[in-house]
Image 1 (spheres, rainbow, N blue to C red):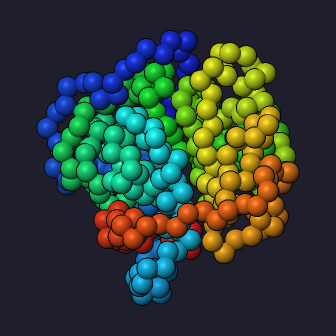
Image 2: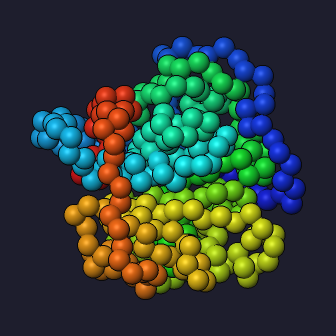
Length: 310
């Protein structure tokens, strides 16, 4: 599912898969999973497999950090109902498929091209389930404007109010580094639920002020007025260390939980601004045995998750 920008003042209910379904493609005819980070799934696959083999595959019931992160990403879509899940990255893709296979069966997932697909399939592989709907690029604008989508993107920089930069590092007029541009971040953040995945929690990513505002944060949305704030909804930030959100006074980033083996001090040290911390911070929940089975045997049997979180 490609991301696009552009706002709509209306919010008429729409069925995201209202178009006439077509016959499913044969698995060999699908050309990849671009919207779910297929390029990232392929890049570094050799190193990922080396790490996976070094672990002896997966032994026992102990969950890895990568698996904890996948479940934390899945939780972002809990309670969303019939909505398009658009994950960017390997672990968010695992999370979205895991959510639909367990507690969020109404989620809609695409093959990354133009078809909603049923079932649960492995990351880095074409889906083998039947088609649920035809969703060419032109319909993405309607889905976005109707708010029937929840995207999980990857920020290069994010600040305490949730402003995100994916465009450039340094002065925008003469940047030190050019990134991917604004893309659909402005439209995504003002039209439908948005979450973020950060595989390396570090001060260069969690900054006091982003160099360029691509995705709209709570302070920027409030300053822009109802056109930006009416449907603005930043749900969750998942990193390799913790889960965070913006459910605090003033919508500043709040530490929700730390992953097993991580301390609050670790998260604070990796963050370039002051976090909202409410008393004792719990541990992120562990995967259930069934979730571990699905991750290891169905969704990511090749261990591609270790390319993002070793």
